[in-house]
Amino acid sequence: MEIPFEDDYSIKEAEDEILRLRREIAFLTKARRDIVYSYYYENKTVPVISYETKIPEGTVKWHLYKARNEMKKGLIMERKIGKLGLKPIKATNFGHSGDPGTNGGPEFYLKDTLNLNIVYNVYHVPKNKEEIAEDLGVTPVYIEDKIEFLEDNGFLVRQSGDKYTTYVKFEPETYSQEQEESTLKKKLEIAKLLANEYALSRTI
Image 1 (cartoon, rainbow, N blue to C red):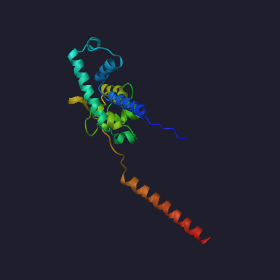
Image 2: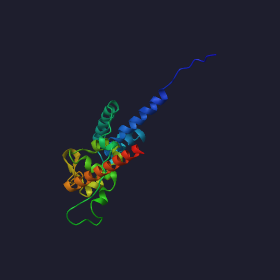
Image 3: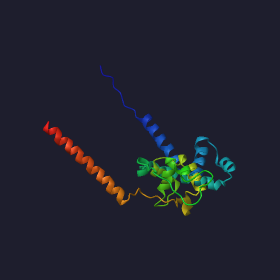
Image 4: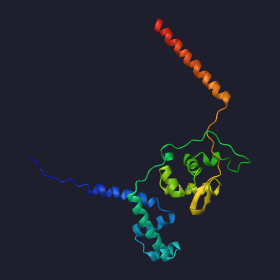
């Protein structure tokens, strides 16, 4: 006996669409995200949002219009996680000139992996919060407080267009010629020892 059936993916597709929509809302600026949440999730009117946020009604409507366009664009595009989101950098040493502050040197602020990678992300090219978040594979919600913290303590510098740069200097690990020669010598000694052991085992 065969029972006819029809696969219905509408529920799953709807759930996926909701998740994607939430993700795109998270990529909006904080002010725009709060307005969208109040309007669509709390069903507040534009005048109420305007009163609560002390923003003119026309500006609230503009934010809603821009938010719809940004979310529509985000749903169409494929967001890609940057290199730092897949392989974050790690600091091997911290240095500074001058006297440390009351909290200590830069290690107090940059020992956190996310803080360190936020700063490194704008080292070569200034970026805004959304660009930083996308490169790190997180939504702006999770880095806004950290960006504010780093800016307040001088590790990030805001530029025009709400982009950030840093005056922190990052240097790759360097080795002196003596260190390189010593490392090479040890490798050759180990290789010679292994070769001798192998040759000895062949004669037994």
